[in-house]
Length: 185
Length: 264
Image (tube, rainbow over all chains, first blue to last red; front, side, top):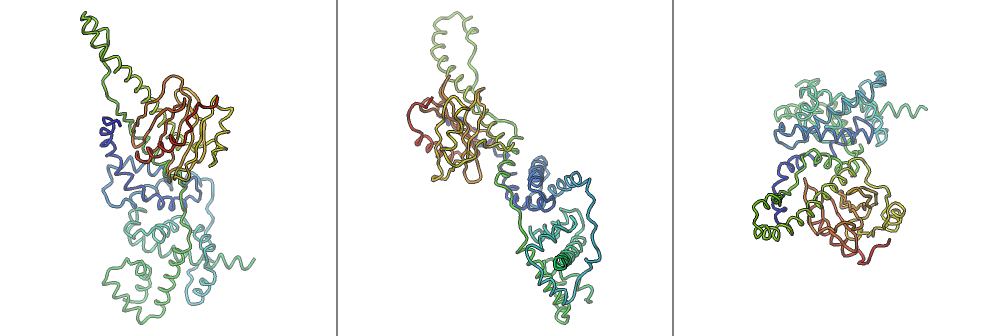
């Protein structure tokens, strides 16, 4: 209908699709991480939007690949900046080391099996310190490899390995402990 | 490989993060170590539970649209309208050639009029895109959220001095989701909001007072604007959906708009 305008348009957006094609497919993963770190829908959405805007600004420094780890790195920084602001007045709940001793052995495994369910798992994950919760979300939920997590969190691969092990250990202990508390009351 | 070393590697083993040589050594050790076997099973169980039972939070469908709008809002506006404005007439009159002027006037005047009218509608289209983007950004997509055309239409009564026709295209895949008052060209206009998958279409409707819109499409940074006039009303449809889909949408709106003078 308006040939002149249309063929002029055709090439105009060529500088745009790259970014959206690379990064929009990771929107759900990004939101999931932000939501687990910030614990609030609105904050999570704001953080994700901010991360996309920053990623877009820095897009010329992106060196290719699937972009997920790159986006998650930016998003994680945004989240931690927000956490600092949001929780500056809160004192973190002290972590009760007594009930979080490493649980092992057949007995513990049995206790875990009895008490593990969606609800206790959710509560336990919420209670984990941020640095533990994020490696579980990144690895077990979002499927990032150790190497990618190392670059997102900015720690060596060996530390990813030990942190993930400790995170899972604490999660297991928390599941058993939180249920034990419930059964006492 | 001793037991303590092996124990530390069970997690990475489960996660498939060990190299082949280490894998083989660990498996050799595990073959004779019930404690490690049991720990590995526990690790499998825990991760299996995490993966099966942890809620994966889902963003609202608005988030993607919001981000796209914000991303596209940062790009420089690129209006594709680059026709030169015709030479000013008085310069030509200095030449003193009536014949030349008459000839030029006969050629240029219609062209100039056409240009002015199109630049006016291109400004309108630009304004419509800005409204569309803003409606997605500030969480102000709808003042009345309803999928019922008989709710949306009466809502405008008393807010506008005309009554827009509201048609529902749900059966065709463009569900009506609500309406909003907006401002276009310094006047209050009705904005009817439709959804297409996770995208939104703003349909602006207002009575023809100064000039009707020619059927034409505008494109700006991935947004398409289609304008037309029918039955005394001007229409502008704006969306980030594909041009083909927007045309399909507009065709259906045109087909279903009853061809009569609007109610006053």
